[in-house]
Image 1 (cartoon, rainbow, N blue to C red):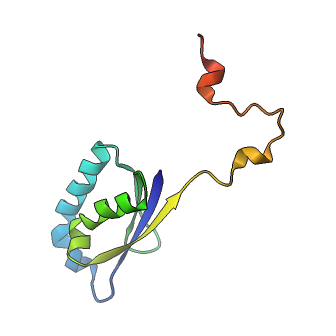
Image 2: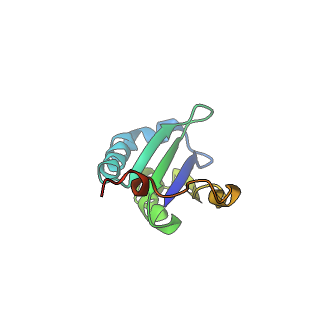
Length: 110
C-alpha cells in the first residue's frame, strides 16, 4: 500500500533547531529508501518540509517508521499520514468489452 506522508514543523521551532539533526535524518531516510520502504521523497516548495511516499502494509507501519525519524523523536515535526489506493474501483467505469486483464496475462508467451 502506498502511504503519503507530509511533515510540518511544530509551532515554536525553526529550521535552525532542526539543522543539527539533518545529517542523521537524511541517513535514516536513505536507509529506508535503499530497503524499498520509501518510494519517493520530495521537498515542498510552498513551505519548509517534505513529502515522503512509503510502500508499507498500512498507515500504522508508516507511522512506525516516521516515529523513528530523529526530528520526530525530538518533537520538532509532526506528520499527516494518508494511505491511498487506485481511484474508485476504476474498472467499474469500463464496459465489459474493455480488456482489463493484468498486463502479464496479455503479454505472456506461454
